[in-house]
Each structure stands twice: as structure tokens, then as C-alpha cells.
Length: 485
Image (cartoon, rainbow, N blue to C red; front, side):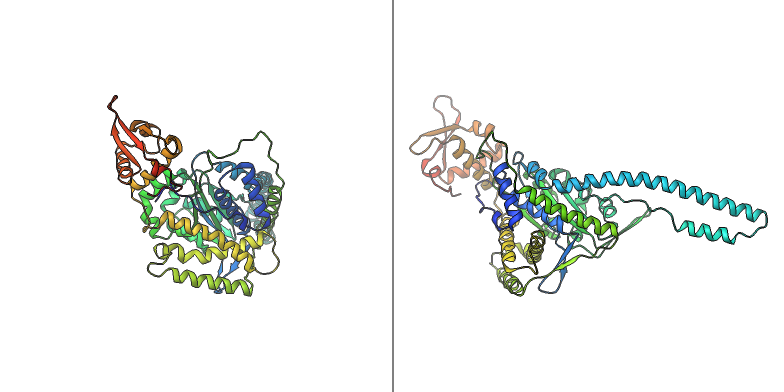
């Protein structure tokens, strides 16, 4: 896994979203100044979550697939991950709060009804016992008891959408029944990577595939979930993800787990955000919230009625032709030496991911009829950005050695914080770079500095007075618009 230091990814295609999502995203970008990729990926998550319980998509190949999406967002502390989540996902949290309040009322009513039902049953059983002891007929009483047993109050079920507890048992319990829909979402990736669920990647893979039946057999209970829908969104800092990949990276990659994710490592905005004392104005985000609430309420009514039948979203003829064209281009790029040849795991899933996103965007935006070629092209622009991110993060062909990773990070630190500009004669203590720079492990720092010296970026020398190690920053290197390492 690589680092984002020294890399400037292309700008996130926030304007590729359809109108309600696009305007909400741009408004968050203006008011919060979080990375656009962070906002865009959160939009995908919200849109997919709102739609996944209501629709499926029919691929041009004839396969019917869910519209759930998995997302992996890498962002360091201070990038305003929690702020973006708080703003975009408030309709989901509100729906969960309402569901919990309604469940409490229903539970109290159920307990009262159950008590009355049990008392009546006890009375009928006592009456039957007395009749039998006296030698009287009890057929009518037994029929009444049987009829009474069939009228046992149904225990209410607590349904809530946003989940963080993702043990295998917790997931299956949440999905028991037919057509249940949940979202596993966390902005604390380190908690998730240490959880029991991440040791069961096969189950998480199956959840993305949305099997018709998901069973969990245990000695104490048997759980059955039919036609479930699950989205997974992980926001994490780089360090815990790297630690997880160091432990289980080959297993996760080999199982195709990360290939089921849209991944992104947004370029940081820290240090470039404008500080204003004005209170932000929200005009577009409420419209996004309203649409999400409509869809969540629609799903709630369907699931509570017990008749979940998802609407099938199909492509127009033009969009089918375009999808097939893109699929053929993808296949060509899988050839040896092709752009996708080193990430064939993701390439195998990318056309389905594209179809899922296009269908969710179409439905969320209340587009009429079938998925248009314009919506498909918009979804493709977004997925193509993530394709590049996946290649950068997971391609074995472009993995950078640690000394190069560290050298790039140090070079950008030196340029941003130490270098005094063209025609300067800039020197800095090596220990200052160790204390304040991005690489604070001495052995790695020395290796990276040796590489920088070899590339002509610095000259390492000893001070004539203090006899300490100093670095001279070479203007010909740091004066480049893009430093080449």
C-alpha cells in the first residue's frame, strides 16, 4: 500500500452527480471545505443506502443485481470526516431515532397484550383441567384454547439502519426475515479492522453479492435471512489500514474483498481552507435530506407491511449499447501490459459497480423511465476516478519501496516548510527534520535522505562550527513545479 505524499490525484468529479446530489455536494464543499472526494464518496454511500432496499438493477447481460455499494475512504484526522457524515447522514440517524422510539412504545403495548393473552390462556387451561377432573366434555374449551394460541401477540421488531456492530451473529440477526436492508458505516476504521467481522471476509464478500439466502446455524439458534441488502462504508486513517493490510492484506486482496469497494485517498485541504466568521447558508442540502427521507419512509412502509418487492431498474437501449462498449474497452485493458492488467480483481467487478451506481443515481434523482446514457456516462466518470485510485493503492506493479515513499514525503515537507525559495542557500539540521518531519524513525530517515542526495535534491554535510549533520536544499530540485523522484 502506498502513500499519498507527492501525488496530486485528478479532481474528484463532484459535478458528475445528478442535480439534487450535485448541488448538495457543492454546498457542503463550500461550507465545510472538506476534500471533494470525501464528499463525493459520502454522497455515493447515502444514495446507495437510500435506494438499496427499494430497487435492483438489471444489467445489459440480463443479470439482476443489487445497488448496494462498499466504500473505503482514507483520510487523516482533521479532514472533517465526521462533519461530512453528520451533515449527509442525518436523515438516516433521524429515521433510526424514530424507529427506536416507536419500538419502545410497541414493546410496552406488546408486554401488556402478552400478559393479558397469557392470563386468558391460563384461565382456559384451568377450565379444561376442572372439566376433565369432573368427567365433563372439554372439546369446546380445547377448541377455544387452540384458537387463542393462534392469536398470540407478535413481538415487535427493532429495525434500524446504521450499524457499527458487525460480528457475524449481529449482522445475521439484523437481516433475519425477507428483504431487510442495513448499512455498516464507521468513521473509526481502526475499530472495524480489529473486529471479529474482518476475520470473516467471505461473509462480507457474500453480503456485497447479496445472496438470496444467508444462514447462520449454531447449536443455540438458527438464523435465516432472505434477499438482504447491505452497504459497507469504512472511513479510516492510513496507519490502521496499513496495519490491517500488513496482517491480512494478501488474504483480503486474494479473496477479492477490496475489489468490491470504491476506494479513495482524497487530497488533503488542510492548510488551504479559508476561515470565515460567517454562518454557513444551507439551501441545497435540505432538498437532499428530503429525498432521502421519502425513500427511507417508503422502505419502512414496505418492510413493515411484509411485502418487499423491489422495483427493477433497466437501461435504455442507448445506455445498454454504451455499457457494452465500456465493458469491451475494459476487457481490452485486461490484456498483458494493459492499464487494468495489474488490477484484474477490480476490473472483474467494475462494470457491475458502474451499473449499481447508475441505477441508484437514476432512482434517487427521480429520473423518468429507464437509465439514460447521460446518467451512465456520469456514473462512469465517477467510477473511473475510483478505478485510478484502486490502481494507485493496490496495484502490485506500481507499489513504491519504503525509501522512495519516505523520500517523497520528506521532499514535500522540505519544500513546504524549509526551503526559502529560488536563489536561496537553504540549510536545515537533520535532527530538525527527524523531530518535525513526516518520517520520525531514524533508520528510515537516513535511507530516504541518501536517496534524496543521490537524486540531487539535497547535499548532506557536517557543520564546520557545531559539527552536526546538516542538509543543503538544492534549488534546481525544489524549484521544479513537480518534483521528480
